[in-house]
Length: 197
Image (cartoon, rainbow, N blue to C red; front, side):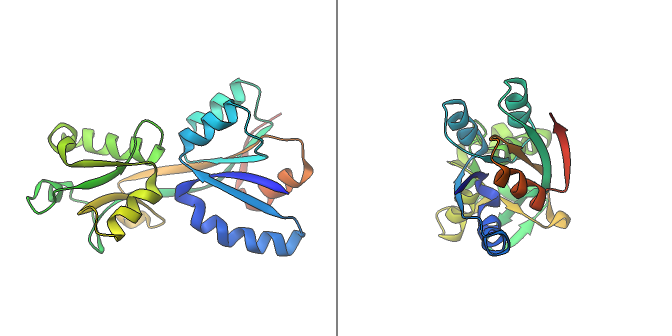
């Protein structure tokens, strides 16, 4: 069985992709989802992942420096968007309205989507003002779930729609094992190889 650690923002799409991959190659795949920072920490502590799909360039670069990465591949990209109720907004001033009391954001300490959202708020001079309204989620997927359940009034979420985006997030696939099935996985899904050994 192939074990793939995947950033939570890509997890739902990857579940669908896995079904097609398993059918085509007759290779069983187990997906482990989490924030990029938490998955990275698990790899450092020896988690037996064959592939790691990160939602940033920083952790894959660190794994390469540490000699843990055999190759790295561009897997695609996603976008950070602000969602209020059922609509996306690019004007962040909406967050200052009194009816927006709680805003979900992935934890900037471990989640690239949280780091990107924080950077956007800082660029617009809103980080300090909005900090009391922020509710921290473990990752972008949890922020979306909090909004969907009505626990917050707005959320910074992952989207595939560039037209509503506030920031861009790269997905980098990292080969962590010599297993040929892992190479096959990355070759199947990658757009290009960025770094190899």
